Image (cartoon, rainbow, N blue to C red; front, side, top):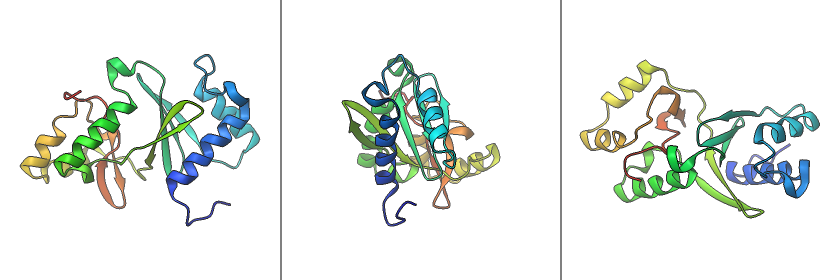
Length: 172
């Protein structure tokens, strides 16, 4: 099994490398979908629990402790992973990074992958509203800059609510 002392980022980087072994160098070519690659990987490793969610701009590979996002759709229209990196930098400069799940860029085989900690439970609308109402005015102003904010994009991380999907925003 995995060494528990390794970070989720290190485990995610190893998983990306394992996915490449499934199909070799052509693994993430646009002609071959992420869902198919993961399905083939899971056929070889049936005990792994991994799911794939596809959005308008990005595909997310979700495991028990990390999420790997890849630009696969229309990132220029709907906001891609690099926009999340830029928005996270903006959050850091604003002192608001604690409101967001932290992205880590990992370049492998000339392709960018974006690694995030896995939020354990998606927040309900009730939790999301209560969380928002308890934010300070400055925090609410910051959160209001994110266009696609809904309960599916807010989750619990280390017992606190945070925004886990924030690429589509007014600033970029």
